[in-house]
Amino acid sequence: QQQVKQSPQSLIVQKGGISIINCAYENTAFDYFPWYQQFPGKGPALLIAIRPDVSEKKEGRFTISFNKSAKQFSLHIMDSQPGDSATYFCAAMGGGSNYKLTFGKGTLLTVNP
Amino acid sequence: KAGVTQTPRYLIKTRGQQVTLSCSPISGHRSVSWYQQTPGQGLQFLFEYFSETQRNKGNFPGRFSGRQFSNSRSEMNVSTLELGDSALYLCASSPDPLQGSNEQYFGPGTRLTVT
Image (cartoon, rainbow over all chains, first blue to last red; front, side, top):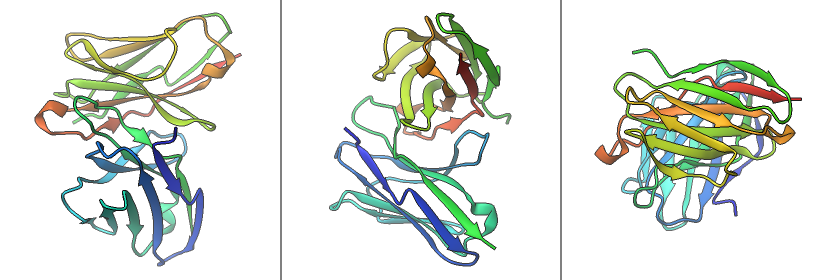
């Protein structure tokens, strides 16, 4: 059972464009939703995270939009740069003393110069 | 602060052998989690330790085990290695989820190849 579904699998955008990655979750007990960025040969790096009591969070060029009723959240990368080319993972955590992250399958983002 | 460190970075083992991987969390972090990353299954949770106690465990066979020491450093062990255990093993540290801090910071991983 895939509890966090991520789309698209891959995404190509032009420099300066907006990259949008979507995730949907099933477990309503989830209460923490981070996004990670991973470059080849590196571990995932925490980008930005949100809790369900807010609908949007922005940090620099990165914005998370959260829709609790639809059980969906998305990452928007504004003014995408070639250096943003990486794999992005959404994740979710929550439910009592459950401290494990459940990850989406990842999105390979390529930003063309 | 120094980040999460993992040793060794690369490892080649033969089927049937066992392996021990090590993780040093960020200074002051008390929770350590382990994840397996493969192209087919993605990132999957193995287990989480806090104050030397395993609090959460993922759906992996008993061949996968771990422990945490009093200085928060952690090790994971895989016994009777199988070809399918070839993966990137990632360690993540967190300050203290009980204090409302859920952020997990990952190390660079240990690339395990089983032949």
